[in-house]
Length: 309
Image (cartoon, rainbow, N blue to C red; front, side, top):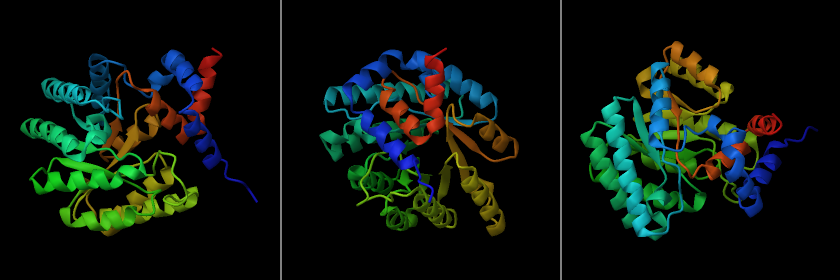
């Protein structure tokens, strides 16, 4: 019987993320070794150049100021100010770009009300500018708080906010069904955190099956679906399913990561599908990079090839 090495490989990389020696090495040399393939620079000016280029190629984009786990109120408020600057810059540059952010970057660990208030400030500015913000999903322990904040903001009249569901969590189908009355704007992902089998499917095949189940429910529901995957089998399934069901292309989009399967992104865009490239930037790129390495062995090989150049 063939052994699926992907879960073991993924666990190894994600566990190494917490190793101080590994963190120091990657932070020191990561950009030179190839992290820049996945991160659009460390400054907003650098990111804007990349976002503009992607837009010119026919791709939509979102951007994220990399960072998470803020436990200082002043630091969280500083992050809010940076995001206000990003929203203003997107508008000034006339970019087809929205925002994705983590609630722990806005101070979720300091309290739900605090993080919600910070996000409300950003949503108000985004609404003034005709823009949209997606709340990224973090570890399973933060799903309840994230969805509570999402619901609160929708109840307060913010329609320019969406969130994320992770297919590797057992609970996600129930969460999706509970959100459908809101006609939500949802991004579906497989999941990028190291979770125990008590809360997450340990086998890739089960995650893939659950992803298709979530996609079917979301696409036939009243909201908008962002299909975030590089898995061509899933992409082909979504294309066939939506064509068979008569679901318009204005009801969904494909989302992929900057630096991953650019050829596929451009091909789908040429075929008339909306494709959004997730294009993060910032100095706090370490954890983001390590999750990208954990997702695909090819990403590790890319870094290793650069090591010996």
